[in-house]
Image (cartoon, rainbow, N blue to C red; front, side, top):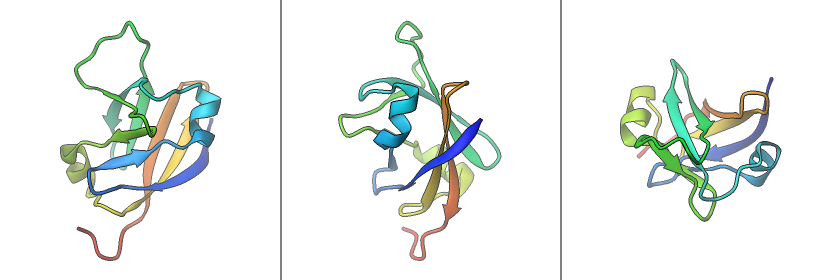
Length: 107
């Protein structure tokens, strides 16, 4: 079951923060790998086990941010400073990012 746990904004480099309130129930740490998938209106970050080597994996950086690649953001029409809702599914070990507010002056 997914619950809205946080909101975040896309920064100038396409990164979003995965806040501690989201990381804790999923036992995510900085440096962990996530595999990003895109659906019609959202992005899902699937937690990857260390033995799953995939060139499409993204790492959470030292500040617990993950980059949403430009191609993915363009596909969804997401821009810098757009606000995303962050949902976690502890049973599936996934995090979903959903657009909840477009920025007024999108870059």
